[in-house]
Image (cartoon, rainbow, N blue to C red):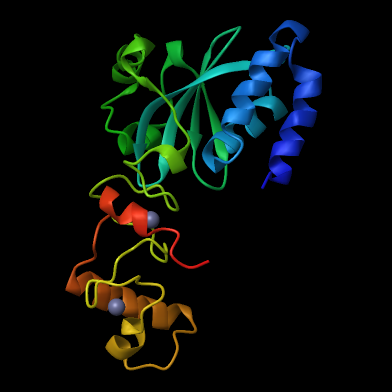
Length: 215
Ligand SMILES: [Zn+2]
Ligand SMILES: [Zn+2]
């Protein structure tokens, strides 16, 4: 299914993309039409062109990813731009030559300071192209947790540590909490606590084939 976000991006591209780059830009968009992360980036880029000039994204590079947050580089005819992206939104960070300014972002991805991010980003050739999440077997297809990372709480791919089933579908959450339903924040918090005590099952790529299990 093609999302309305995809249609919106296409409309924005009518105004932004130079004629001679149109075909390539559209085929790149097509390649990522099912990927929320990339669509969020495209949407932000074509809504707020970094230089305010006609431009088109001709490639996406994966710089880093952790806990469902992606640091991506969009290469264009003008420059290379950094974006911080998750399932909800994309935030423009600046061009790669100037590195990362935000303290919080630097810390999150393990760069000691902006200078370190500048030298890490100097040679973009050492990073690989970003591929749609659903095709990247190293990421949870729903919450984008990487191998060995915990899923976002509530992710349907998370395995139940008590019964080995699907945590959002098995009945363990009721037996463990002794409640018939988990209806508010407090119920969820107490379940989260018990789950953490038991030890949550991190994402592993062998969990992927079981998904989607409920259609
Ligand atoms: Zn997940
Ligand atoms: Zn269970």
